[in-house]
Image 1 (tube, rainbow, N blue to C red):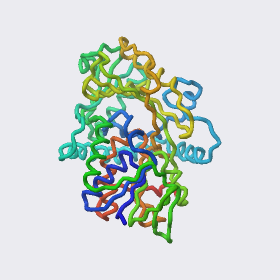
Image 2: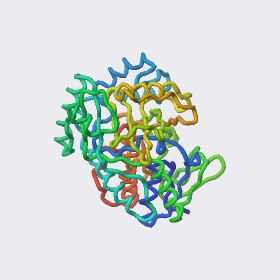
Image 3: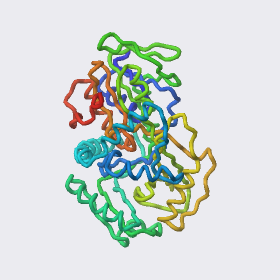
Image 4: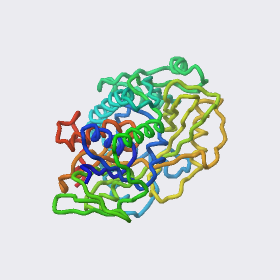
Length: 416
């Protein structure tokens, strides 16, 4: 019988498996897929302390209502009478306050800074060699209104000890000499890093297999076996698995699984899209966020650029809206006029679901109801960024060690 079963083989589950394995635990990872795709692969690859404002913040609801009327909007909530979505929406709206943003900034900063440190350490370990660059991040903006907001963001960042600099058009353009930009200015966050998600995931899987972590793939957990306050095992359609400890890290499906244990973990899937261009003729030095359009560009080495964006709060069963990728490409052209690429074929388009908590903070820690169950999910758009840090924290929780940072704000019981 393994010491720990991890439900979910994304970056959160694999990083948890890595640190638990390093601490001597016998680990089994169960995933309903072959673990060769998913949100951990197609994301922008940002490792970003600059992202200290949670998704639930003032103005998001008002702006979201405006955007819901446009098929080209970067943020979209699909109207639905689904009870889980309605409950999530209720808590989300309640969390969109200045007080919540203020109280979230330090926890999000701390876990992101821990993440950068751990990724640097991980990439220096034998068996790991993924593309990782600590060059910082740029944000480009086009309007006076956005510039006013960005000035406030720079001030908040500096208050948090995060190095940020407001750039005029000339300064911003000089940081990216390989492209001609049509912008008003930008921000440079020197603390940020980026990596190639695909390479990271392949390194993790290879390392864990070589170090005797067991993988059970293409098996979906359908239910649980319990005894009082103890979780005894999980059931799939074909088998049952028992362990001493359990980690629920199933991304956008974590809330649905938690409900089978009568746990209330408000969580929905936020779908995003990306494409990866090879030999595009464009060269960028830094990750770039196109602020008004909410589009992300990432250099991934070997003349690769990944372009991604949109946040669709929708059912995981809803067919993808491929036209949104056309909107993403059109948005890039507004900032980089020479950028002119047609909509790629369907097989070149990636889409996946980010697990969005109801307040923009991840769920990390034990639950009161089951003494041997740890939740690790709800990371929204920063799952990759916080992957290594979350894995380290999960290992510390299982091992009853003091956590590397304060995880009280991430309590999975905060909505119960």
